Image 1 (cartoon, rainbow, N blue to C red):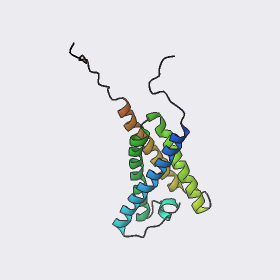
Image 2 (cartoon, rainbow, N blue to C red):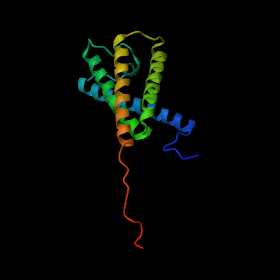
Image 3 (tube, rainbow, N blue to C red):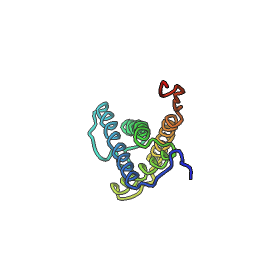
Image 4 (tube, rainbow, N blue to C red):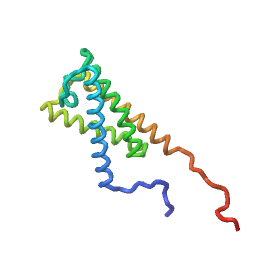
Length: 156
């Protein structure tokens, strides 16, 4: 039995801790981006901005700025995938997991699952951005050349 390069070992504690970490990154940075947007427009902060279906809309300035915050948050989360997950193969898995738990949170917060097209479009676009950019960053790191020193280790 030969050794495998980066063989995968089933570690549920690591996977669960990475899921929790990515959820923390998602909501922390989304809160920061929304606070920045609220500071620009001078609106009050609310959990509705994160969980409500009606906030994300193309018709109002606040809705468009909230969409911008969600898109910027997907870029920030892609950096989180790069720093903490570090595997290109797992980026899509963690991205879908983060957005699935966000959908469950929205469902609980609103007590129903709404069919608002703008909410679905923003979340699908954010999933795609987060997964593709995170995977690109991780694969770029994974494919970096490993330096091999050809000089002798000792002067015998």
